[in-house]
Length: 416
Image (cartoon, helix red, strand yellow):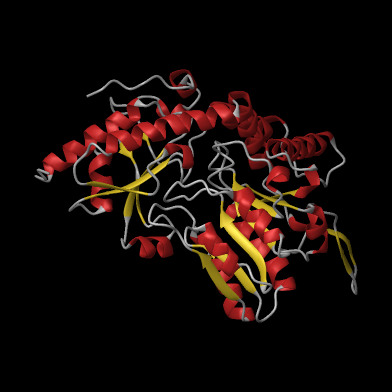
């Protein structure tokens, strides 16, 4: 077996920051499921603990020191997120629970207000259910038609089909920046520009791109962009919606109650300013602080360095997995055009069984349809196995995966 090349990041130094990677049961943890949710560095955990232990109070509501400190920390996190994706202003950043809630917010507050029967929405065959189901529900409710950008046999979006899909009836185009199954990096700028040319509003699901590569919303020119904190070293329960301010100001609120109002009377209610209009109730301010700490951590690494590390480990994984007989890899075989995700099947082994066998060796992969059943139907398979990588994965994790796959084949007496 060839030796692993050196990583572009000092991964072994970084792993010290992640408590989960302390040796357990005498063996290291090989975590290859970061596309589902990432591990957390101590810097994130400590930032959240500091709020709970020394500055905890409800935000925006108190005129005492603890509340003011918590509010300042919450709004500082918003500023960090805005800078991280180069949003034009912090008030274009709405905190939600996750990318799924962000997409539902757009579907309910923007699309239900602006789309009518006969209008059309363009999606892709690559979409995660979070960017599929809300539009399906809307289509059934409002008589809106859904159309899909198809994929090629190699797993790329067939952008030549856009000329036919983008008619005057299309009012919204929503798509994944990076596929959570095939890993393909879509040309978001080109899609946005072609959609804008016909006056359509654009939504970018950046759940698999913002954690892994530089993303600039102003350069993309998109109207909305969403992502989740838990996929980018942050905690669960916090997500982000970036939106053009004029669109956010025109949209009605998604949820109603406390803190999203300016005035409530017996016969009148007036909404708060953006972004607070969309943050009803006590927000997840501790989680927002954790997300801000995650942004600090990734910023210190440099997102271009993060991207280069993932390109390198993905290229290595594609090479090593292709050496395993019986393995079928889905999506582009060029690491330059895919994120840190490699989805595959092993002949004669169900992905769930394979994941269980690998777990015996301490290797965590994902198995199933990865919340992308329509894509799996398009691929002609019911389920796949998926290995996904992040900043804390050394290239030796790929070697461990391949060794465990060969061991699984031997245990199942698969000779090919």
